[in-house]
Length: 460
Image 1 (tube, rainbow, N blue to C red):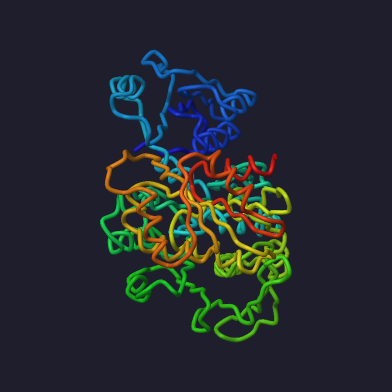
Image 2 (cartoon, rainbow, N blue to C red):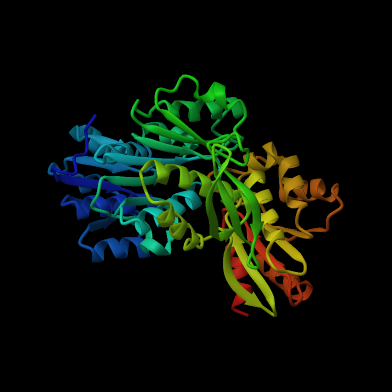
């Protein structure tokens, strides 16, 4: 396997360079002196930005794009073996690696390589940790799965031994990573189009934890079921966090200010530290996220005052309880939640946010997830006073014909909550303009394009 050495720049080629993660790592290699080229299906704002920074991009993937001066190739999961560039590279014997392997190789170049994993909360926690490390002057290199204002996008190239990245479990991508430290926030049933069941998911997270070296550290949520079975064979140090005082780091006297932001007293091994933590984000789930950040930051000897300051100035990332604006006195929030656990966390947090009536426009994400967790979705969505459903966002799947938003509507109706379904976004907008009143809170929710509804309403 070819090993990327940031001290030895060479010629790299990215197939699918316009992807959000691929583009970030193309920039990272470019700034470390590599000659970076790549291809993509079409021009985009991302590819234009890369070109402006001196990276050559070819539109359209053809065999002749692959030349013998290329030292190694990175490709996305969307590149299939019959892709002309892929076929040509194989014929020429050029070293090739998929994106996740490339991330793992980059991690090997850093003394402190932190991977943030968990079924939920990865982007927010990675972003929180970024704020703390930046505030403490740690000059980290960052790769985050959302757009973060503090770093002007999804990638930051630092000049220290600190590297922080999200570690996604889907298709076992994170098993190709090389962390020296890791956070595992939680483990829940998700991505059941890939994993067989919850035990299969737990196995993958366990394998991820086992990647840590003996002198590494795992910061792990104490509320994960049967945690001792999960950690007993690990050779690294294990630090727990959670709402129970049996956790190494926990929280007491949790409350929410007038903006719905979390405030709590920090406990270490069940004893008060004397530190009051003020968050700049809503929800009890973010109290948990922040505890993991505190735990790993203290492990790296960051002063608690710098940690507190970093957390208080973190106001979220794009599409994570993001305030979009208002229309007719109705506040519009957008959130990426697309799993029942995330939906419950977001709607519970919304309950602490100033409002009269709570409306939720939910766009189910993938047929397989909707079918597998139908009852859980209905239960979670019933936390809203009024629910509006769009069609299922297919993403990578094809319609199997045995599940739809109408199925979910029928399940929600069993809870007694008002639920409406529209197949057209414009019809949803008309409905909301008629029904929502001054002082209401509207949340557009899902991992697809449901955000467009809120953005359109705010412009009216």
